[in-house]
Image (cartoon, rainbow, N blue to C red; front, side, top):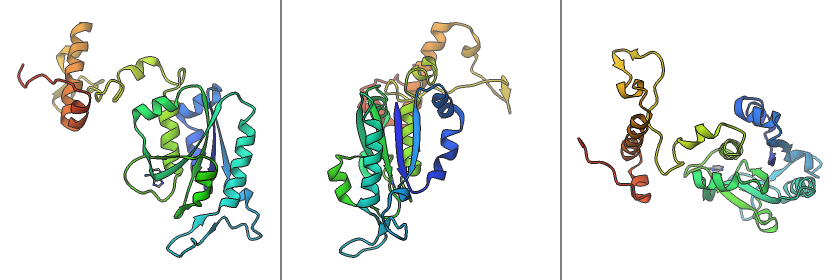
Length: 239
Ligand code: ADE
């Protein structure tokens, strides 16, 4: 899967592509991530990429010219691959990202171009002309799309087969409509708190049942909306 990111702040991606699981996915050629500086595409003699909005208002808007040229370049370099190119703009007005959307986007039939806005946004004509999808990572506003883009890519890449073990994906939060059960490791006792004995019993079926119950309990505690949405029937207290 290929990602081309269009940004004015390339350096914000340095740690993302050179660390941990994402770095490994790149090294294993499961994904490639190319970061392009929108400024390199401006035809403005002062290298400007943003201008005040027509009609007045605060902030600056990224101009259609450099962004359009950057998109044309990115599309051109992805066209040789037999995959659909999806163009995404990270935006607080977009469709809100969740597990199901990340899962769909992690299917192997797409390559991506992701636009990171900064300032007040981008010229609307880019969105119309290039059939751009808009994705938000939550109902709040960031200073730019770069962090949101990393959240989106991370959530997609970790679901691509071969990036992390199938086992770690199987029981994590949101895969089955529930949050993950609590986890413990050494030491057995910490500040007087012991690991639940059942986890040391070696009885796999009982451990699995206990974890399922704990998942339901945790979900009910932190995200009762998921219990309702997924029609999960929690056990009554004390049963
Ligand atoms: N850019 C600014 N805020 C954002 C958000 N919440 N999601 C995605 N991109 C953004």
